[in-house]
Length: 329
Image 1 (tube, one colour):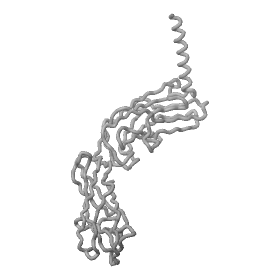
Image 2 (image 1 turned 60 degrees about the vertical axis):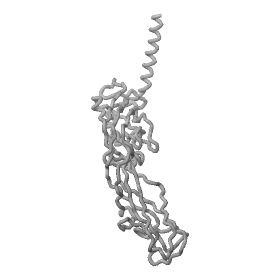
Image 3 (image 1 turned 90 degrees about the vertical axis):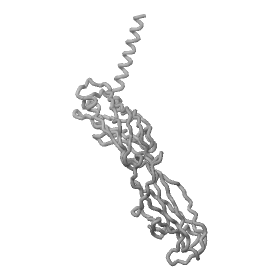
Image 4 (image 1 turned 30 degrees about the horizontal axis):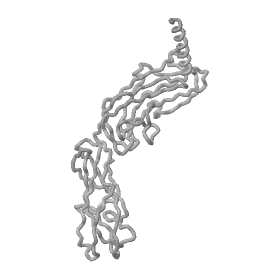
């Protein structure tokens, strides 16, 4: 029985040795030791906290650099025998991609993705590179490896970001290294809007008005209310508003064609400022209070029918459409 056990062990050893050779058929190595063909495992720990800065969708909100050289204590330089004329190597991340991106990886925090960049080549992973081999030619693992926190949606949440992701380095068919980025990051934000939202539709009835009494009508007060998320409680950051719609200039909205003529909708603030139809004339919204889900802002204005210059007024249906735009970037 003992003899049979030894025979099985010897066969198993031969199989393992053959598999190891197949995984590095080019016989590449870690410089400066040609015999060093072992796979390197590199643990990387992210920072405990990160503050998310203001960024557009697809932009970088925060980042951290990792020195693989500092962790391994070596330069992480790989070479291959010159008998292999062209060498192909690649870096990839073992993690699911964020929808709509080819280099940003999904996280457990809404609106936050991870991108990893080779700092030397300034190139986002994954990528594959080929080069002409020569005696003096060699290549490095990413140094540094930069982890970027990318805004992936309008709404961005804060909280505990759990990171468990691998970078795989492959040289020809040799899986040369595996960097494991594992840990938790507490995300905070001091000046970052996730976004502001209000009612998608708001009807403003102005009622029926006799042409003869047009100048005597009482303006209709209108209140717009929006909730801005992603701010520290009590933040009173500037939110401005302007408007879009068919208009005769600031404060005068045209009616939808096919109804009354010679009339528009006059739009002013309670203090008489005409509502702007361009971003540069945007007016400040009023911060109201802090709510459980964010910061509440409001904007009040008056609306009434008004004659457009000296145009003749023709009675009819008087509808109009007004869009409001929030400017908080």
